[in-house]
Length: 114
Image 1 (tube, rainbow, N blue to C red):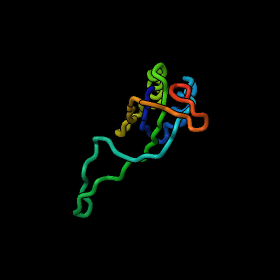
Image 2 (spheres, rainbow, N blue to C red):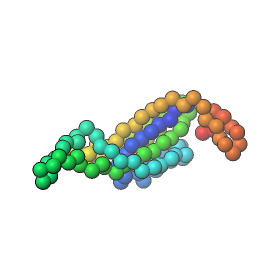
Image 3 (cartoon, one colour):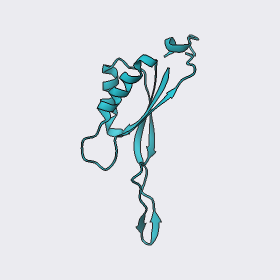
Image 4 (cartoon, one colour):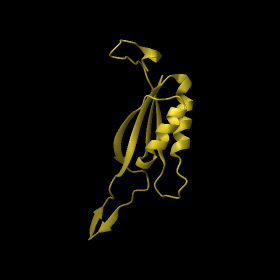
């Protein structure tokens, strides 16, 4: 089992969500996030060093069985890819191992709890 964490632009949520649904993945967790990539530079404003504001993003968390890992990554990557020439990137995908999943209501464990 894997936990996929994807940080994407706010305006990409609907297309990424639909891409995941089309791939057969319907259980996701969505939360707001903020951050910046490596292109952060200090600016001087009225003689003071200022670091620009954090960029608002969306954080998706998706627990999948091993056979759905590559399907989920491809669905997110294709839907979130930005070809608009922006200097802000399209986001990141992190894949972590999951030791155990337990559905609280039924007590199911493992892949059946996902």
